[in-house]
Length: 95
Image (tube, rainbow, N blue to C red; front, side):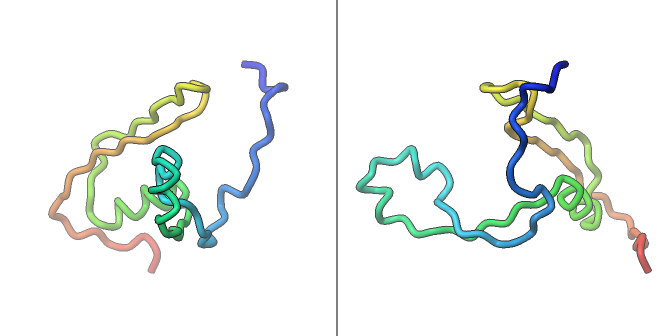
């Protein structure tokens, strides 16, 4: 795979600040409906933070899938995670 012509990513993957944004999929609504929507507060989470939180809740990950983007299948557009609750007590990794 040649990566010379890929655009450099913008932003910081590890940025945990809270940002104001638009309601999800608001751009699909007619303008008259869009104008009445409020703003949302969003925070990005890393895959590591998400998987760690799932494990800390005693969930056993059955599958984790990355669904390719239809516009650029080299990158995921969505993720699917399926997990089961297990009834065992986990000791913390960090004291």
